[in-house]
Amino acid sequence: MNRKNFLKKSIIAGLAGSVLPASVRANKATEEKSTYDKLMDQVGFNHLPNQKESTTMNTVYHKASTRGQANHGWLEARHSFSFANYRNPDRMSFGVLRVLNDDKIAPSRGFGTHPHDNMEIISIPLEGALEHKDNMGNGAVVQYGDVQAMSAGTGITHSEFNANSDQDMKLLQIWLFPNKKNVAPRYDQISIKAIEKRNEFYQILSPSAEDQGVWIHQDAWFHLGKFDEEVSTNYKINKSGNGVYAFLIEGTAEIAGQALETRDGFGIWEVDDFEIKVGANSRILLMEVPMKLS
Image (tube, rainbow, N blue to C red):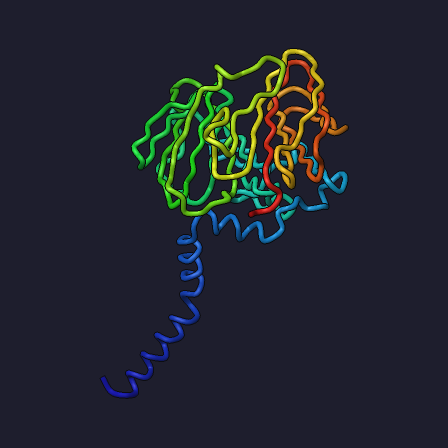
C-alpha cells in the first residue's frame, strides 16, 4: 500500500473511531454498567424526595393515578419511581428505596433470565403465584402470603414467571440500595401466615436474621397490615434518620393527617413517630428506610 492510500485509510479509520461509533461505545458502556451504578446515576447524590411534590417540608404524597405506566401486553406495570422507560426527575427515589413496581403478569408469562447486582430485591405477591429460578440453584414458587428477598451482591441471574396458566399474577417488586456492596448473593423466602396479626401491623423485614421476617443488607424495616375494621395506631421510627414510605395496597387510610386511597403512596421523614388511621377492609405496607446512603 502506498503512503497516500495508507494515510487516506488511516484518516477514515480515525474519523470512524472518534465520531461514528461514539453512540455505540456509549451504549456498550451503559450496557456494561451494573444494576447499582445505572440506578445510582439516575438518582444522583440527593436521596430526598423532590420538594415540588411535597405537601410539607417532610412529607411527599403520590396519588395512584400519577404513577408511571407501562403495558407490554403480558405485563402491566405501575411505577411509583422512575424505572425502565418511565423517567420523572421528581420521582427518582425515597431515600434508599429506589424501585416500587406494582405488576400484573399474564398467565404463564414472565421475566426471562436476567442479571442483577448490588441491590436488595423484595417481592410481595398480592394475588396468584410466582415461579422463581436462579443461578444459585434456588427454584421456588412464591405465592400470596409469602415474602421473597434477594441480596444480589456480586451478581445473580434469575427468572420469574406466573406459575398459573389460568389467572393473572399480581405482585409488588421493591428494590433498595444496600449498605454493603459486593456481598455474597443470597436468597430468602418465608410464609408470613404464621406471623400475620389481625388488625395490626406486623414486621416482615429487618436488617437482622434474628428478627421476625426476612432480612436484607440495609437498615430497613417493613411492616404489613390487613384490617377488617377501623384501627388507629402510632408508628415509631426504628433508627434515627430513617423515613417511612407507606403504600396503600387497598382500602383507605390517613397518615399524619394525609388521606390515602387504594395504591396511593405517602412518605414521611424527620420525625420520631406518626399517627396512622386505617379504614376497614384495607391493606397497607410500611417501608422504613434510611433517607441517605451510608
